[in-house]
Length: 213
Image 1: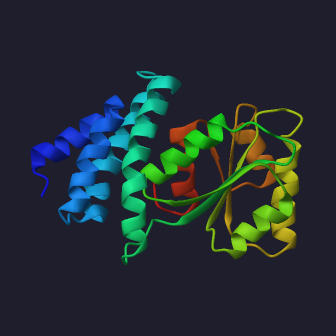
Image 2: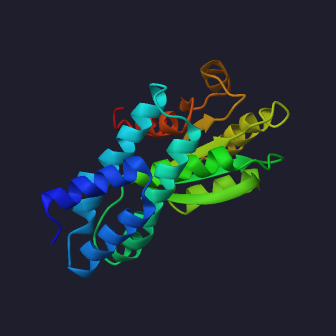
């Protein structure tokens, strides 16, 4: 079983982006029958939360956060199949995609990793996602739909998605974000929350669900 020192090492490895150490420690925990849900909650999620806080404070930047997120993903790739066979419950199911006409995915991909690192089940719908595809994600159980747009020309598509979901009677919360998105725009189109960056997207999803910050 992992000792407290091992868990501290795992925490630090995620913060420092040391994917090899993360994979080694999580693999050992799995092989020794460790409670992987507890490991995720007690060591790994707090590590990514700290990374997000450092990014929001301007102490680290996108490259460092991306390296940490990839290290975290290395551990999640090991944990997810095990948790899928157990009664572990994620915080909620989130579906995310870049809206129709927008082919950018770097920001979206980072949000996906941050959401997984925060304990959410995430469905990545990809880029250039149709209104119907977002609605179908609601039918598959998404509690939150996250919309990403990088271009001013695709930003109006977010309003079309919001209106489409309403017209179909979908009740999932809608969270939006991207380089051209603001809180004012989120308010204007009736989105439930706005994430100013990847850590902010995690906080926005939690706010939309009433889970606090």
